[in-house]
Amino acid sequence: AQTVTQSQPEMSVQEAETVTLSCTYDTSESDYYLFWYKQPPSRQMILVIRQEAYKQQNATENRFSVNFQKAAKSFSLKISDSQLGDAAMYFCAYRSWNRDDKIIFGKGTRLHILP
Amino acid sequence: ETGVTQSPTHLIKTRGQQVTLRCSSQSGHNTVSWYQQALGQGPQFIFQYYREEENGRGNFPPRFSGLQFPNYSSELNVNALELDDSALYLCASSPDSYGYTFGSGTRLTVV
Image: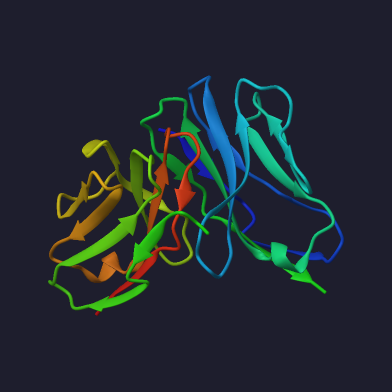
């Protein structure tokens, strides 16, 4: 069974600085998707960034980028120029390539932005 | 606008009762999934529906059941509520099982 592990329950970063959230996962599959979701106090789960495992190039979305290390089964999220609105719970997630498969979430990292 | 609307936003029920949670998805979103998120945890997959048929289920007992309707709405039903069922219940829909849109959830408290 696939698992997703986030070892940092909480992190803090100064506004405008850069922070990296860590995630490792375990799977025997070769094709899959990896995601980072943001959950603010509004509770809605918002997709931040997505990575297809077959792509060697790391995904980027504006200030958000990932470091995808397939062999090491590592998928970290880097947030550059942190803003107050980035404060939220961040979940790393995995989904099999099978279109019918579920999303498996980690336990989350709470990110605090210090003004 | 999220495109996925869940109701109610909050709900308090008594142990042993039954509850129905509702989700309204965007037109064309043939896949809908339900997740349970306990306090301080990541969401856990309950089940998924595709074109009104269940096509995946997580490790939840049969008292958790669902329905998906032709108008892209869906329901999560929980019978014989237990205290441990207290959680945030999230609905997620997708047109293609690739890019999911989540709702803001229903906070269920069982007392």
